[in-house]
Length: 362
Image 1 (cartoon, rainbow, N blue to C red):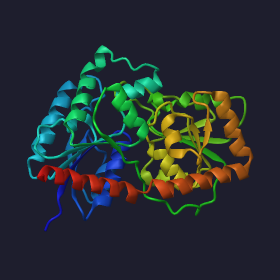
Image 2 (image 1 turned 135 degrees about the vertical axis):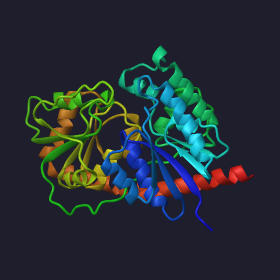
Image 3 (image 1 turned 180 degrees about the vertical axis):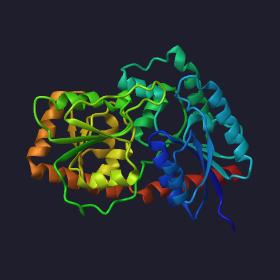
Image 4 (image 1 turned 90 degrees about the vertical axis):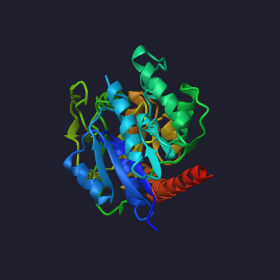
C-alpha cells in the first residue's frame, strides 16, 4: 500500500520555510509530501526541498500580510483547492488563505503568527484598521473552515482566540529542530542576534541602545536587512556587525562558536532561532515576553522587555561571569533536547494527520 499524500503549504519568508522542510524530512516514509511554496524560492531553498525528500511546486504570489495582496489571496485559495483535487489525502496549511480553499480534503491549519497579535505586542494596539479588515475576515474564515487548528505556542493560541473571537479548538504543538552535536567547538566571547531585521517586532534598536556606554565585545547580527515590500534597509551602528542572510550551514557553524544568543523581541510566538542557539550550547538572553516565558522559563536569562538598562546588566552578567553563562547554556541545551525535538513535533503532527483522516472517513 502506498503512503498517503499531504499537500504542505509553505512560504519562503522566515521560519515557516524551515518548519515545513524540517517536518517534511521527518515525515518521509510515512507520508508523501508535496511542498507548495508561495513566493519564489532561491536555488538553495529548492535544493533543501529536494534533500528533504519533498516534491516542490511553486506559486509566485504575495502573502496575505503583504500590501495589495487581495488578488494573490484569491489565487492561493483557488490553486490549493485545484491541487488538492489531484488526489491528496490531506492539506496542511501554514497560511490562512491556503486553509480557505474549496475542497473536500481535510485541512489542518498551523498558526505561526498573525498581524493582530503582532500589532498588539509590537505597536501596543489591537484595533483593526481599514487596511486589515479583509485580513481579519480571512483569519476568521480559516479558523472556522479548518478540520484541525494547531498553534506553535499556548501564547499564540490564546491571542488568536481572543483577538478574532474564535470558538475554534486550537491544539498546541511546539516546534522542533534537529539536534546538533553540541560542545564540539570552543566557544568565543561572542553575542549573536538573528532574524528579519526589518521587522519592528525584532526590536533590534534595543540591542543598539544597550550596547552603548560599555564594550560588549564581538556582537554579530545575522538576517535580512532589506524590507521585502518597501525596500528600506536597516543600518546597524558599531559594535553590532551585520552579516546578512547566512546559509544554514554557516549559521550552524557560527552558533557553535557563539556564547550568547540575544533576542530583544517584542513578539515571537515560538522562535526557531533561540531553539537552534540552545541546541548549539549558547546561553539564551531573552526579553521577558509571554511566549519566551512559556518555552524557556528556568532555562534562559530574562531581562525586562524593552528595558535597555536591564538588558545591559544581564548582558554584562553573562559575559563577566563564566560560571553563570555556563549554567544558562547547559540549561538551555537540556530544555531544547528534552522538550523541542523534531521527533516530538513530528509525532504530534502524525497523530493529527491520522485523526483528520479518520474524522473524514467517519
